[in-house]
Image 1 (tube, rainbow, N blue to C red):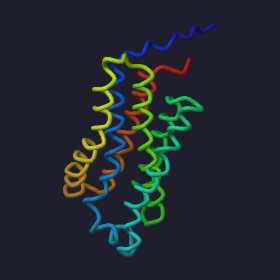
Image 2 (cartoon, helix red, strand yellow):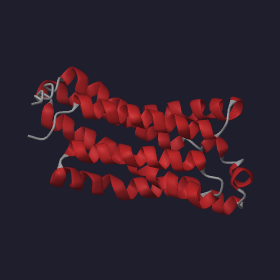
Image 3 (cartoon, rainbow, N blue to C red):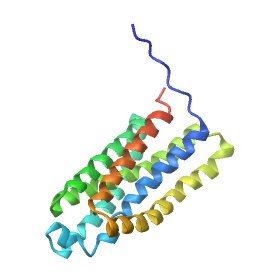
Length: 192
């Protein structure tokens, strides 16, 4: 007979860094391919016009998924929807890392854009779990994760693209998404 251990209690000290990191990783996806813009037509064997969809698909998916993920979080629980967003991010990153043409890359980038749902869900989780005196600064940090992720994404992506394989950008994104999924699974409480 196996005994199931209860989930650890959510600690405000762990919740804020986990959610901020999730926000940074999600925002990182928005600028991940910017250093590759000029090379995308050659890398993917397509036209410059079609290659722009690699960036547009991410932004479009983020615009659609952000409000939808909030509603799904209200209906089915924020933690499961956050894990779903990270799953889409992993799948999208792997699809992009293995893509050899523009269509799979666009599909993968759309999945990566779906990760932006992590940010409003993270803010909502903070409102549910944090004491009022910590809420303002924690939401400010979560909101700042948008800028931090974008700011970190450009130089990091440029360095990887310059000194390594462009596919490494997406394998790295998949690893970061797995780390986010583990942290969300480990530190956010299960719905009660």
